[in-house]
Amino acid sequence: MILSKYPSVVQQEILYHMELSDLFLLSFVSKNMKKLIKSSQMGRFRMMDSIEYDSDGIEQPWIHAFYRHKSFLQMNTFESEDAKYEYFQLNVSGKTINFRISDREYILPVAVFDLCDIEVVIKSIHSYLIDFFGESVQYNWKAEDTEKESEELFIPYIPKLNNVSFSINLFLEDEFAGMKKLENFFASNPVFKCIDITVMTTTGPFNPESKFYQAESIRTEQEELSCPDILRHFQGRQATVTCEKGELFDLIVLVNRWKSGEAFQKMEYLEFRKLSGVFLPNQNKVLNEIAAKHIDPTKKPPTHTLPKVYDGYCSPYLSNTYPIVSHTYVVRESDNRVASVQIEQNTLRFGVWDKTEEEFLRMMD
Image (cartoon, rainbow, N blue to C red; front, side):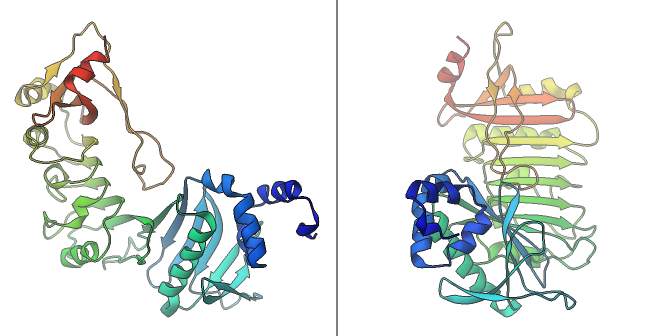
């Protein structure tokens, strides 16, 4: 089929129904073909919310580019010795890269390269995708810990890329002793958009000044409340903390520090769940200590919910935070901003409104 022989309207319709993997490969046919795809599919590309790079492995990263859960490009640094593939070369942003076609049920280009070339190859492919799909698309890089059985700290591959948000899943074993290595890892990389971490026990604390606490979104499952100490040092927007134990004093301190404007300036949502015991017998104590205000019990309180930065497993397909419907709230002294406070069984939820107290109360008039 010679695409250029068809009328423009037919060309656009054909291209619109092609998979991203096919469009990616077709764009290398010629400069005119790439220009045609970009111009005719501009509306389609603008509707794309994000492209995901999903990376696992440590010595030999295996990277997929996804859109809406479907991979359209694969990159890896090794091939099976038993596999017999036919390779072809493409010039990607000035870098010649070997490709093959995957042996899956649908066409998928696979870039194959030596580990020593990973940085330049990834940068070249990323530059091409930005030029192809545009900068309005969000590019997310997710690194995942696949070495949970190893006693060594997993150090994932994090490339130096522009226009990319980074997220990571980590698992720290019992008596984890690699805190210095972990801190160096966070210090040497951009602030993460999302960190999903399981912490058993460690031989040392997290550094209060660590870039770990600057992540936009953190989800933790941890043994000790103070490691990591999210309730004292978090500087991001959304946090979900599940802990074996929890002290009411720490929750009271958190809310009062927010109220005074001393900390948590960016916080939008916090959920703290303890696995041992419940809060309810001491609910009134907490509410009294934070000087909570109360909505008229005859009125229905508004529901606080926000789009998640990432979901609980650093997935880019956004859901919302747990809806908070509570008759109790607190007010920040510096700007009269309101936060709803909800205590249920073993869970405390704290949701900040982008409204003053007067605006908040008018929502129920």
